[in-house]
Length: 370
Image (cartoon, rainbow, N blue to C red; front, side):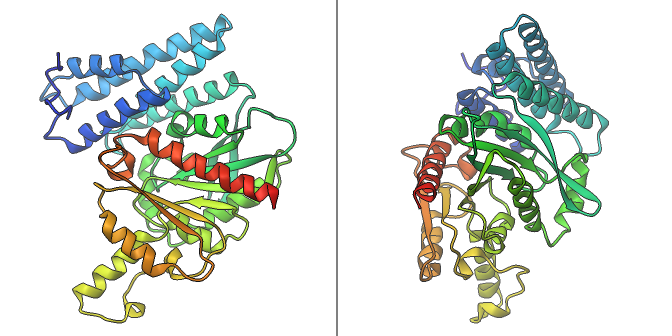
């Protein structure tokens, strides 16, 4: 039976797109261990229409239940169960924080609880992960979780995973880490917020040098004795800006990249050109040159769903017109027939991430043979 809060197409609260999108994310997270479907449906039954606080209250309660279960399992030496419950707990804390205003103290409390669950998870995994701090700009440092490859002997190929400004890194611990681990890759999960509250996102969005953060990350990885620095790749999770694509242009040390390839920059340039009847795109006021406007030695994979914001035909046209000489740019479009077709592959991120990490594995293996 479908819970009362759900429509027949499994949309939760049709009048609240943000809540519905978050519930879909939670359901798909179950595929990777970030939730259980039964718990998600249980919360859907308990939510009260017209009570905006019930979302925060119910997810926080469920997060605490999983957190206590993790602590009990850890005390008894059941590391696998402890890890699973900490991952679910941190995801549920993130869900509890989502609809709250960035300046709301309850949101910050939920974020701190989420981060504590992440740290506890790192200590329970084998080999253990670690929290790292990476200097970036004078008054702000990045923070990340470094997860060593299963075989901790010698230097391992490493994947940097980072989201858009304002996106928290904890989600990567269940969404992307299993894919890296299964392929013998170390992973560095990052966000741009560092130790700041979520309202710091406004300050980040005002910066015109977000791409410089990736150079700082590469400088840090170069100092680690367990990283094969000739085989470092980056995955930009989600869409919304092209700062990682701009970083690829400036960072010759990257061996491979998965990002939007500057498609949004190019799309905006085309939009402004048509709006103002400009035939010369070079005079359109876009602050940064997109990746595909220049030659790049780093192989790039762009993935998108055919039902996303940028239509697949338009993306194919932009990529085809922008390929230059030695540029190595691949485009993968997921169709509705195979799923993964929603914006940022929200309907089936597992399918997209399997493809992405297979591509990375092939590229990084090629780098070892070279």
